[in-house]
Every structure is written in C-alpha cells, then in structure tokens.
Amino acid sequence: MVQIFSSIGFSLISRVAKNQTERLSLKERNVSFHMTRSRNEIGIAFPHAIANFYLETNDCTNTCSVRYDLLPGYVYWLNLKFGVRQFIDHILETFHLHKIDISIEQSYDYDKTERNFELLKGLKIDEFIMIVWLNFISDFNQQAWKLFSVQSESISLNNFPFEDIKKIHLTACQNHYKASLKLGDARMTLNDILAFNSSILWVNCRPILTDKDVNIFLKHWICGCNRRLEYVHLWFKVSDIYQSDDVDLNILFKNVDYCIAPVEREILAQPYGVPKECFKGGFDVTRLDGTKAIITVDHLYSIFKMVVLS
Image 1 (cartoon, one colour):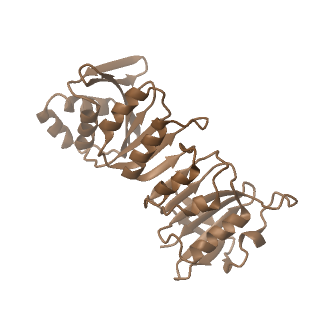
Image 2 (cartoon, one colour; image 1 turned 60 degrees about the vertical axis):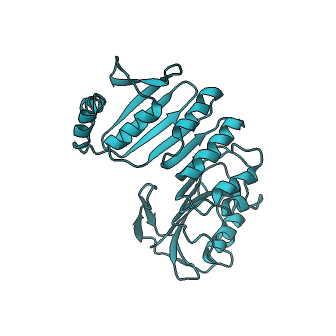
Image 3 (cartoon, helix red, strand yellow; image 1 turned 45 degrees about the horizontal axis):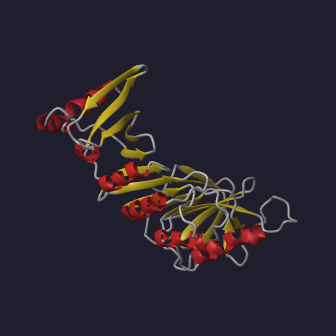
C-alpha cells in the first residue's frame, strides 16, 4: 500500500514523473468516484488493496486538496494546482484506464453537487450507482440519474428517484450490460421489469413479483424477448395466500417445457459482472431459437435464478 501511494504521489510532481509512473504498469481493477454531501472520494482498487483519496475543493481557486490515509493515525495532504476533473483524468491516464465507476449518495448540498455534474460530463462510466434514502425525491436525484445512467454501461439503484415510476422505462431500454435494482418500492410491476433489456438483470428487493409473474417473465424470454439476457436474479412471492410459503413449481413452470436436471450435475457460471456461481441440478429450458438456459429456484427465500448458456 505504501508503494501505491508513493507512486501516485510521485506521478503528480511533473509530466516526466507521470510518464515514469505509467511505465510501472501497476495492476489495478478499477477507479471509482463517490460523491456525498460531505466529501468527494476517489477509490483505486488494486488486486490486494484499495487506495482511497478524499477530495476537498476550493471554490475560489477551482482547485482541490487530496487527503489520503497511509497508516492508522497518519494523514497526508497534497495541495494540487488542478481541479477534481483533472485529478480524475490524471489517475485514469496513469493507470491506463478508459472508464470509471461513479456512485452518488443522496445529497442536500445542491450547489456543490451541481458543479460536480459539470466536472463529470463526458466521462466514460463503467457503472453508475445511485443511493437514495427514504424515497427522497429531488431535482438533484432526477438530474443525476438522467445524466449519468445514459453514459454508463451498468446501473445500480436502491430506490426510484422519480414520483412516476414509468419514467424508469426511458433508462431501462438503454442497452445497459447490467441493471441491479435493490429496491424497497412495491410500486414496481412485471411490466417495469420487462422494460429492461440489459444482459444482467438483478432484482433484489422485498418481493414485488409473484410466482405467476415469474412464469410470464420466463415465457417472454422463451418467445424471444430480450435476446441479450445472460443472467437474471428475481425475488418473488407465492401468489396464493392460502398456500404454504413453499414454491409451487406447477405455477412457476405452467405451460413451459422444461427438463429436471440430475441433482448431482454442477455447472459453474460467471457472466461478467456477477460473482462466480455453481448451478447444482435445477431445470433446463430452451428458447424458441434453440438457446438453452439453466434455472434454479431457492424454495426457502423464493429466489429465481437463470443463466443463459452461450
């Protein structure tokens, strides 16, 4: 970790120092920019460590100071002659990266975050994460979502920033690689889920879909809806209030041709952006064009997972 901070600090001295640091070919996983009410933070993820830099801007000079924690109890400051965007570009160039992750946590300091919007325009974003607490709806949340979700390859959202939930459809059809919805909003319906055409669809929230909805979702995929889909994770609930909490496979697979896989079969799958997962047993289904998929159902938590085989 000391070497990482030393290398980054050295790269800031001059153009020559930056070029020499680039030649080190430091192996990093990604760079992320996190915006909150109190501070801006840049994190650089390396294979065995994460370097965090905390940025404080000077509105008068349009420059920033960078604080980083090298060791517990030790704080070092770098007073830079350039601003936040220049520091981000410097980090991306130094580590030969073309994209950045951006996460925004609900903020009431509107003026400050508004300026950050201008700073971040035009960046190529790998994943945009918006964290909205207590269903707080504001112009800031809506503007951030409209601006950055379009620039991003993947999106993650824990609450809707819109009063009209249908506005999410404008984002859903943007061909994102991954859409992760960790929502507590019961207004979301099956039609809202079907609007997403991402390759990875992760809906992890309190149950908003029923087993009948999952059956319809599956039929849509079999008929050719969202041919980009590689992996789906859905949390659902049983539709019959008089039924036990156990999942009724007759409802889940109603009018669907499927085969029960041998219990001992294990298939390891890891679509890009999803943790490696072993599919044990499960059910095999086939799309009309011959594409095959494996489905597993967690009876305890009512979770439907499907991975499409390439």
